[in-house]
Image (cartoon, rainbow, N blue to C red):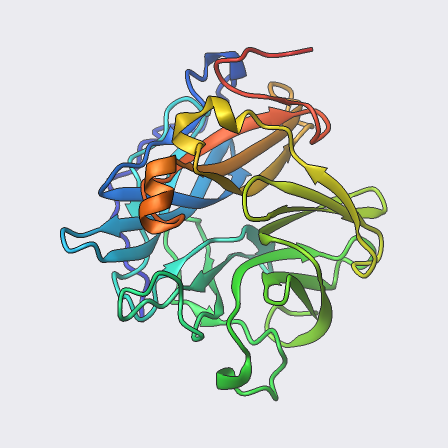
Length: 320
């Protein structure tokens, strides 16, 4: 199955550096959801001066059925974003969605994502939800998805269990080793030398939609409990310190009053214009959360921090 590319056209006409001024961003919201379309589960890559945003796009029909697809948008200044384009087919038996991140491996870009099957318009995915990767040479044209057999080659696909929300990361001590984090029994972890052959490692208590950073000799894990975003730290992926919830003003944001979740942190501390962590996440209003749990009317949004504890966001101003 080849990935479908419904492109609205390239808008980055040149590659000259663009000044990024966080104070110019008018609102935390990047893509605004509505009754017809929801934007969820952001994953962001900054490459060659371009922020490439991947996300779940949920499309609601008149009969209430929701289809999930992988979407993409771009920005060079975090102010203006291209019209979303859809990269995967409309197929409720698959519902490719929830991109974890994009990494570089063997000369190609690798994006991890999930299937979220709802063939009967189920509220949540069936037990057939699995993890996948797509690859690209240019970040625009993507290969057909390939199954990630994170439980090992000898475990039948039918016995892998329901799993969602993958995230790929190189080991902090051995760059030849890769980790895949995913939602199953909390956060499960598998390791690989080639992103093809995997060995199951274990699991730890966590919410969903994990994003993991290497920071010194530690791993920092951002996860989503029932509501809000949590932070954990570990040196060995076995013993985790719970650092509580990220302090974000959910009560001040009607578009996120129902649920704030799916945080993705992009480390931009070395960028001369930014010098901070950027946090991408999605929020759902109270009415939409009540009507369809977390699937309806979600919007993608942005905040930033120096230390992952004190937060600023568009409209509040840059705090020292």
